[in-house]
Length: 269
Image (cartoon, rainbow, N blue to C red):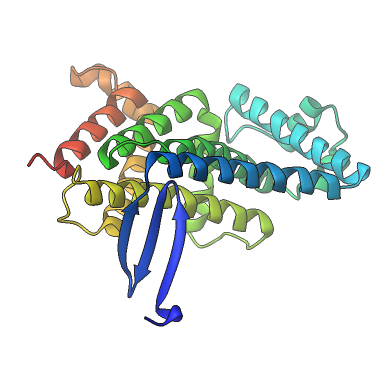
């Protein structure tokens, strides 16, 4: 077989070999899986330390101030709401002059994208740890859904920022920048974890092989975002008082979605 026709990727204890777009997944032993996990962690730590060593004192100070601004913006949005937050309030919360704030972010939209970048990065860290677990595909998928639920319940501002980013993307009004590229990279990474769990499940027999994992992964990701968005709307939450049903919060709606999804793709044979 020609080298150009085959690509191999070591990922979460599996070797994924793609030949003509058809994935073949080979499970590694527990010992090798643990060694890969250690190697991935070591590579990450080395890259982080090298990155810090390369930065000058001025660059580190600038990065710390940038993180302070994002922290302050999250607090202002948490306190006053997404639409009501202003650059003046964020500057006051960060104890910075408004002019200094504009040295780091051109406008409120850039700050929102920075919040989304941080939030999606933190979420992906949690999803990455789950995909490394030695569990069946259906169990990993369950864990991914529950981790997502816990994260947005604990960090609603990150979900609001993600919705803002997706709205800009949907309406084709997103200006290309290093920040938007990072947001896009994080979104693709999250999708990859869902697809990987489906591939693992098809390979180990815990998930039916009647659907393409890439298409199914996109449906799961999109539908889960829609369910959480519905729960986030105050009109939907208030409507529960008239429907006679239980409160329509994140946990109840997403929990039902996960149950329905699991019953639909689980292999009971």
